[in-house]
Image (tube, rainbow, N blue to C red; front, side, top):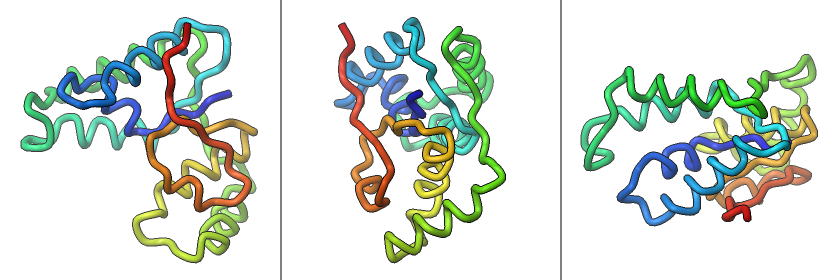
Length: 144
């Protein structure tokens, strides 16, 4: 399973972003493929928050447009919602302690802990995931 970070979702819809083509291509291919694609609420809500924020993108989405995107992603056959498991607090604590910080990495650690619990790989452009020992991650790439 691959768990998608918010930055991939944002880049996939923002045509002015340099990572747009790769992100959109990866997401479209992944959502029409066979491997399970996991979406966590923390990433989906970050997408809605940032994609609708005036001044962040040249053409921010309306709330309904952003939510329609979320619905479309979740409606794809390989898509699943991934939730924290019962051991989430322990995994999150370990990741934050091993990284030696919390602060701005807390949301990333939360997503990483979800991925660890589901034995999944995080798909992201954020190299901060390197700071969490044992977390598997990769940058999106164009699938053929």
